[in-house]
Image (cartoon, rainbow, N blue to C red; front, side, top):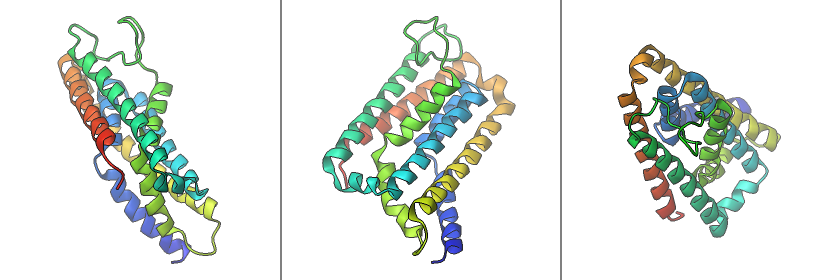
Length: 216
């Protein structure tokens, strides 16, 4: 496979992966509806940064350690599960809190603290991606298939990961833009609490599934 064919094949596979509904999509959509477009895109940028980081780790051979190390995989698995459960519980608490402003205070220790800023949503998106060992194992098995012989492995791998991350950003931008015409409806307290409750339940479900899943 020559570099051009590899890029085309990877682009098709990455595009299909990008538009497949999952945790990253749920996080960005929730942030777009309950917070604002800047925060949603910050979360999306964090997810894309996580993809780029996984691409770099795999190109350096570090991702293979995750694929063969039961302890390393399990540690990352538990850390990711705890993080997802924490996020999910915070969203459900915000959804159940009566008489609140539309935006939940996920980082607050009291009701008067400000809502999460876009930089915090960036880190949330990045951690959601990095703390998912399945993403790492997927990149270990997926990315090398598109690395031609006689190319700089690190540079080419990071380039493919950057291409995947860019596709993700464009997809998240499209999702965020799609929520703008309905912004007034989406920001009604009852609706936003429902979105938080639903997203929180999804995050808890992902967290429990990740915690209980055995490495295959």
